[in-house]
Amino acid sequence: MTLPSDLLQNKRILIGVTGSIAAYKTLDLVRLFVKAGADVKIVMSDAAKKFVTPLSFEALSRHNVLDEQHESWSSEHNHIQTVAWADLFIIAPCSANTIAKLANAIADNLLLQCALADPKTKLIAPSANTHMLENPITKANLKMLGIANYEVVPTQVKELACQTTGDGAMAEPLDIFYHAARLLLKDSYWEHRRVIVTGGGTIEKIDDVRYISNFSSGKMASALATALYLKGADVNLIATRFEPNLPSALHKIDVNDSAEMFEYLSDSIRIAKKGVLSKASLMNDEQIHLIQKEPYLFMAAAVSDYIPRFPQQGKLKKAMLGEHYALELKQNRDLLSSLEREGIITVAFKAEMDDTHAYDNAKALLEHKNVDAVCLNVLRNSSSFGSSDNALTLLRQTGDVSLEKQDKLTLSLHLLEALRG
Image 1 (cartoon, rainbow, N blue to C red):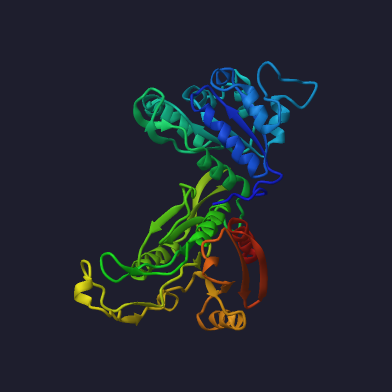
Image 2: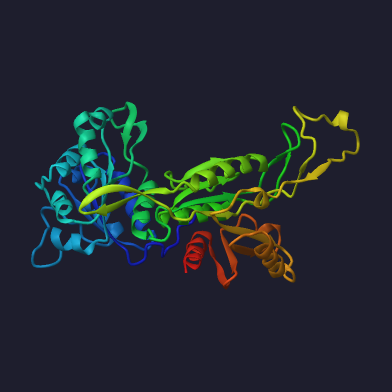
């Protein structure tokens, strides 16, 4: 999925780099932020400079690196002014030593002083040997940070620098990027709201090696689910096809046919109506409250209108079928009409290829299928499927909104703004 060049425009990010072999990955993280339009500054510990030189970060960020040797109190190049400048402070990689010092408010280097001086939510991406990470004291330190304005991007299991395989490798730069973007872009309307998105063309079995389907790529659904994730929603993407490199924290259910999609949809809708957990402050005490935000359902999947009447086990043989083979189909169940959707806001997607009747058909869907909104997508030909950009018309009882052709993630973000308004 293409990340828009203005996704994080006007956002200011401070990245702290500690002494870990994973520091080389932070170069890719800086590149991702810069490509997304963010302004990035770097603060490095002296230990970090043993792994990557400040010059590498300066070349990517176009800012001087803040370190012990170059802090200045005659300019803004110091830990107090730099922290005040930043919208978000990320420490990646964050070594076990730094985790311990953060948890105990120790500030014996410039990076730690930045952390202690920053009252905002901070993001850390740990990197450590498995035994160091699983040490009870390290675990306790991470729990302490969890209640002290820190969010942690989970480590991953892979081969470590010590040539053993285990948990402790820093998260991939793209996952850190997504987590940070979610913190920067979250929206009170979508935050903690449960949302279900369907996508891709259903795969209806003829036999064990053949099926009927359609050209739907699932790209629009993947982009929409990503946009919802970035806005802070609790997203469940149910699809037959997924874009690569989606946020790893995004919940995904891989399905094949319409019957399987219906089953998971029904369960997901039932769960979505139960409410969501949110942290709220009351009388200076941190308490957990069950709050109810009306959930959303985005039906972006291209569900087959007809399915094989008699799907077969095994493989149908050409010799058995003969020179001519007539495949008997039956009309498929209408998922929208079959689902129990009371109490869930439903947005249907409608793809049309007939300019003359497209709008009227979408209007009829809005009026007769008990949906709250319809996203009309007028296709020119079969090559329109799988493209990286799209245009939509949002139809609601209160009026229509035209969303011009643009990359699908930007389009999805604009769609969410239109629905919010």
